Amino acid sequence: MAYVDVDSDAGTFMSSSDSIALPNCSEILWAGLYWSARIAANTPNYANRSQVRMKLNNGAYQVLTADQTLDVPTINGQSWSHPSYYCFKNITSLLTSSGTNTRFTVANVTAETGSNRWGGWSVIIVYKNVLQSMRNLTVFDGFANISTGNS
Image (cartoon, rainbow, N blue to C red; front, side):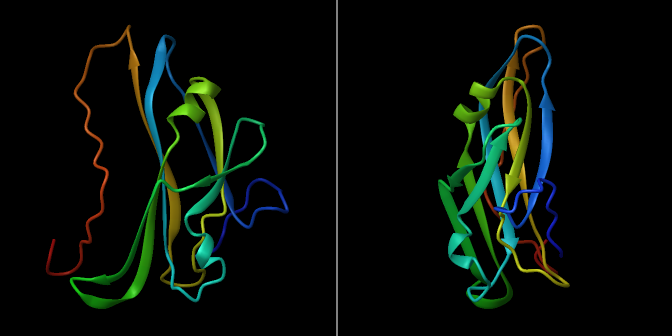
């Protein structure tokens, strides 16, 4: 894994962006930011794994601290050679204040670099639109390890 850094900001060591463009008459009901990576406790910036930076459109970065952090050093009670962490932050108020057509950039997801490493983030958005049919929606907010023999 290698860091991507799209923002040309010397204050970030990694960053990437995405956008939403919801249809007219849409209202954001809930939004969550999830980030995770493979990381060991001796990795630089390990202590900051529960914090990322986020900016909306062309605004300034805000430091976000996870509402929940899950460290996974073991699987089924046995040491795991691939320790990792998973974080969640409710960002509903941030996105509702920025509108339904927004570009967001997330920076400083702490991860190990090199081969057989990973890290990333995602935003989940729940919205309603009075011009569209009602649907049933479930967001799986959890973690499950799937490995050889227990799928």
